[in-house]
Amino acid sequence: METAIILVFVIGYLAITFEHNIKIDKLIPALVMMAICWALVALGIDAFPNWFDSAKHALLEGFGLLSHDEKMHLMEETLLHHLGKTAEILVFLLGAMTIVEIIDYFDGFSTIKDFVKTKKKTKILWIFSILAFILSAIIDNLTATIVLISILQKIVKDRDVRLYYAGLIIIAANAGGAWSPIGDVTTTMLWIGNKVTTGHLVGYLFIPSFLCMAIPSFIASFMPVFKGDLEVEEVEETKKSKFSATMLYLGLGAIVFVPIFKMVTHLPPYMGMMLSLGVVAIFAEIYSSSKFSLTEFDADESDAHASHSPVHHSLSKIELPSILFFLGILMAVAALESLGILFGFAESLPASMPMLGTEIHTGEGVSDLVVLLLGVGSAVIDNVPLVAASLGMFHEATDNELWHFIAFSAGTGGSMLIIGSAAGVVAMGMEKIDFFWYLKKISWLALIGFLVGSAAFMVTRTLF
Image 1 (cartoon, rainbow, N blue to C red):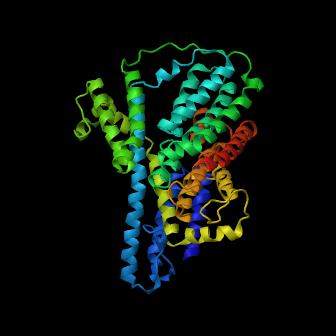
Image 2: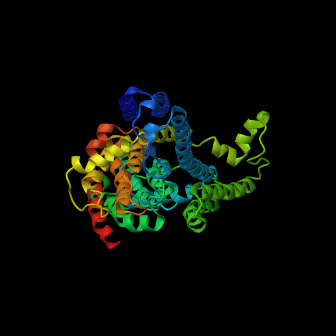
């Protein structure tokens, strides 16, 4: 039965990886894979020799001696545990996405467009790279990419040139998301899972992440495509909300407040995010002079709500397919973890992998090569299940350097292929970027940034 579960997971994994080839959205195989994996666990519960206690991060002793009813009860408790942990991440992301959409409702991101005053291509490159690096740490790399490419489409006339800018934005956004607990889904997973703390994450990864952004941008600035001045497309200015700047700074400030709230109260991050969403929603409703609120909802007036209430409008715009995908993939990985499969895989790593570089100081035998390969793997397949698997495979203490290296490697390694990160996939859709064009023109820059950043991490970790 374990073989069948692994086979279902692998098939689902491949379907997610090749979603563009098979023309099926990745959320569908993720949800099917989750349901089938847990169904097989329930049907074969009596045949499994081991069970992994997620609360204690260890194999449960005497699992084979339990009765069928006791095993089913244990499975239900484990399933509820994993659903709770997954829900923490999903609710957090829902709050962050809604705040970003509220900012966009007031055209708040148009304020960023005003920063671009030059026509020099290299200066515009650096402006967008730095903006992507900073914004992705605040509003996550996916959203930062959407915002900046939207702005890019308004000021860059030549699409061929714009594609190069988009490629560098992907690299910078993924680099910026790696050093912030709210900058990337995988980093958020590690943060919510108490594997990393905000202070150590910034301390370990800011310099490596900055170099991962800066080196490719520096090299690109010497490329012929970025020479000379840019023909800036003149766009007729539309009247924007007088509250656009206010909502931009209020929304970004509310998201930045979340890690502070967690450090002060020690409550899960989604509680802080819900508080931030509530505060931003209050100002949004006041500024829009709306008669509707989050709690007042009448089915007959749903259309009116969507058009008059910025909060309801924003809730209708959030990426629910992404939320369902994360639910499916995280719960599918949880099934493998519960059977002890990931635990056994982690135990076999020291014997099967060559030891390269400095080992993790806990003595567990996890080499730098393993983490680097995880980064390369995140370019080929989705980094969310890779990090989810690492949470089940490794059991180092909070803020162990292994977790920070995983955060950097999984977060920035995806830049090497356009399908390797959420930022790359959304840019691919917005600009219709060809997979092989990106592989030829941008991937080598992303690889250089990844290797330089990894080398920098190996140096900076010795300072902690």
